[in-house]
Length: 138
Image 1 (cartoon, one colour):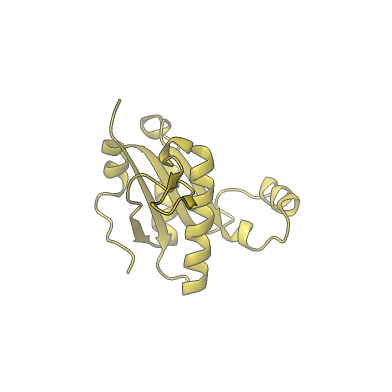
Image 2 (tube, rainbow, N blue to C red; image 1 turned 120 degrees about the vertical axis):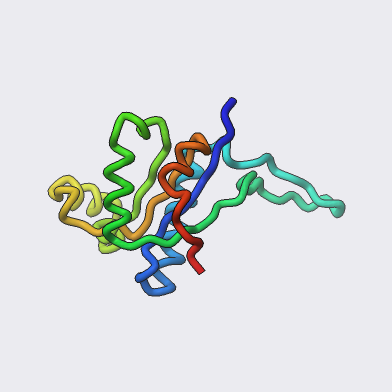
């Protein structure tokens, strides 16, 4: 089995609260799309059970609106289609219900919205090829 990697790339120009919200949404969705990322539940010495958490680090990298669109477009090419990608955009953030999001997104073209962040999971070499030159978001 090939070594895997997970990264989040988030627009560094967003307000801190929206950066945190974007990271949370991307993390939850990646966990659902790639459950093998999550370890088993663990009991501590006292017998308290703790839910399994992600098995490997998840670096949060900085990007901007243009870079996020470029990355998302590259993920649609044959070379990267085997990677798992989740995105969060202003289209999603502005909706109060999931049904509203579905209806809104179905009427939009990919050039009509701004990505706030991407979550990428898959073969480490390919993830690094896409994101290896990006700095950590600090």
